[in-house]
Amino acid sequence: MDRMSPLDASFLHIERDIQQLNVGSALVFEGPAPTYDELCEVIEAKLARVPRYRQRFRRTPLELGLPVWVDDPHFRIRYHMRHSALPSPGSEAQLRTLAGRLMAQHLDLSRPLWEMWFVEGLSDGRWALVNKAHHAMIDGISGTDIMSVVLDFQPQAHPLPAVAWVPEPAPSEVQMLSSALADVVRNPVSQGRAVLGALSAPRQLVTHAVAQVAGLAQLGGKVVRPESVLNGPIGPHRRWGWARAGLADVKSVKNAFGGTVNDVILASITGGFRTFLAARGEVVDGRTIRSMVPVSVRRADQTGALGNQVSAVLADLPIGIADPVERLAAITEQLNGLKRSGMATGVEGMMSAADFVPPTLLALGARVVARFPQRTISTVTTNVPGPQQPMYLLGRAMTEMFPYIPLASDVRITIGIVSYNGRLDCGITGDYDHVPDIDVLCAGIEAATAELVAAVP
Image (cartoon, rainbow, N blue to C red; front, side):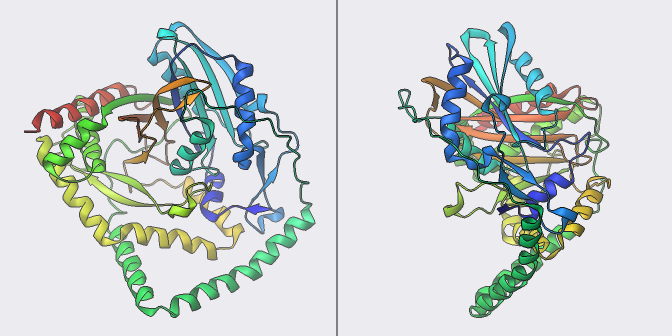
């Protein structure tokens, strides 16, 4: 049995009717489209490399332990591989509308927590894959690695031979309870060993502890301020928009004005929010909006592992600065300060403290948090590095990859960015009822990028 981490389990506990914890993407390919049978065959052949895709979760009786992953004896690839089509020639707007509806549908928790939709009918003979998986199963970094299992680096890649799959027997409730009780005994022992190991290196222990305390202090100073109309109750439906940029253009801005690629992206997004809120008649001068920026804490030797290994920093996006270059400088200065502050380390320490929380209380606490209004952040912005060379599926080149990030409690807009083959593609998720003008934000992000590029000497 493979037991979930407390963070992964929390994503199951906080899901509710209006809050679906699905992550995913839309992948656009050159034509001609393959057949549905061809897709099912090639993807099923690769599932041996991602065993989680044939597993479902089971809750421990009485929630005395965290949920576990077990093989699904009823797994069928054609349940998870779906087939749809747009009225030809289908537009990108129609694809985004379809994908938004699909992402807003809850996954069947009694089956492996993923679906992939084969969408035909895009203009110019193109086709798409819309994939989604529950956040309990996957985060952005590991999600990119999973797609690299499905995709090939060569157009004429040799197909994998079909491998017969035999599910492992499901554990009984007695076995699950025994394992959970053993973990209760084992966990304090392992934590004690970790403490003893840390004490053997006191300098590193003190440095890490100071960073965590400082990081939590930084976090504590940012959790009480109400921000903007971007916060508020959300509904069950989603809008989805796209924005694009060239990676070479973004790098030219970075090289001219300093900072990082991520700083430039955040500056563009900040400019987009300025345009978006101003178009709604809001005062933007002198204002900031707060974004949670996830940070991967996955080690280099864990890049193929499933599950969530993330921390975060809270950044105040300076929408009140009209000049794009000054806006970039303010973001770079702030993020450098956040990196030095240890906020991400503090958040990571706070998350790891959940290992000491009894699973029953963890489940109850996560459900309460999901229903408690928050005004800590106004948006989420996450940047995931993707492959910088062309990828293929059944000999067809993938041209673009747009990420989908779910909405959080009382947060009506989230933004994901993926770099792929010299491009930066943004996927902007919005609450359907409260953000009917999400296209204004998308256009604003692209315009803000163009402003920065035009400013390069």
